[in-house]
Image (cartoon, rainbow, N blue to C red; front, top):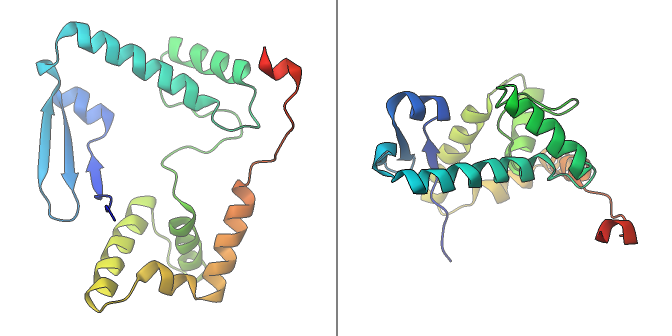
Length: 171
């Protein structure tokens, strides 16, 4: 089974300021640096268009959102110079998977408030500690009835309603 490497990328603003993207592998500290000036202009144009297209597509990733409305609202924000402006009623900042969010909420109930980055770091730390003793942190944590209940609540919150397609959806 192939394991996903845990990495941290430099923020976009830093990459722009430094002229390079940098990725750090969290399980060893090794970094790779990608100077943006090395990319030919014609390839940069393709990357730009691909990035705009992906950002527009992501704006309507939620099946409950009307695509035309989401695309138009995001386009208007981009034209106004607002790259990260949140949509009405949506959150902002990095999202977490079900388990990290359940673990974060569980710790908050215990009086330990941690950021997304701190939760991710703690999970990496705990995973390594449990692995060293031949155990699985996530599986062990989910045996806690409260963490399991929080995870179920989150999954329920994130469940997308199944809506029958109409002929209008096919146009």
